[in-house]
Length: 301
Image (cartoon, rainbow, N blue to C red; front, top):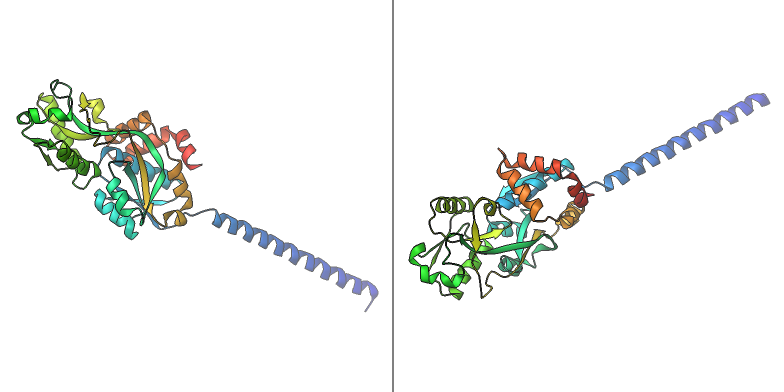
């Protein structure tokens, strides 16, 4: 074989090796980038299930998070439950998150019962909550829980309540005992309780009920909290979230989002208003999220 042919074969072989090596490096780089991309995402086809309670602020924030997380590519299901069932479902792992736990007083019983089997966040998303019995402002003679027995007949000996099993309902039962009130706490639902308050105020009739802030009803009617000298309801309450124990391992980004979440009175009040006045709660939440993207970016970026 001529020397020039041998040289040509050698050169061709070297070029082939170089091309194959380059392809291999490219594939490794591509695979590395793909692997890194996969490791940086936790979005999958499984649903994140968030518990929802039929309370105004809970409907607002659960729909808000559904919008935010679905914008990020997650599948989110909202499951309507009472508080007791929600905590049991977190313990069993059938539910991923409960976005509303009031501490240190209102939901202290759930913290005590589930602190070893449910993850209660140290982070809070609202730091200025208040709970207590309320009456209409026009009831000038009733300003304290201690005034209630004296005006028992005015209220027919009834405190109009909401969902049985709610922490505030249980604290209200404690309040009745601690003040020796000659009253019965009537459970119903939040919408039913709010309807009764609205009807009573419109007719300037007496009514007493447990309520809390943040809540839209205080912008609708002139209501006042009764003084609670024994501080049964506690002072300022903070709102936490809770998740199943391994949620942060499965969804570290979402767990971080929840821990970054913070709202003030104006923000939560506006969100509740948007959700309450929309044809569907999710539509109100979508509008609020669109208008408050800068705030949301502080939580999720």
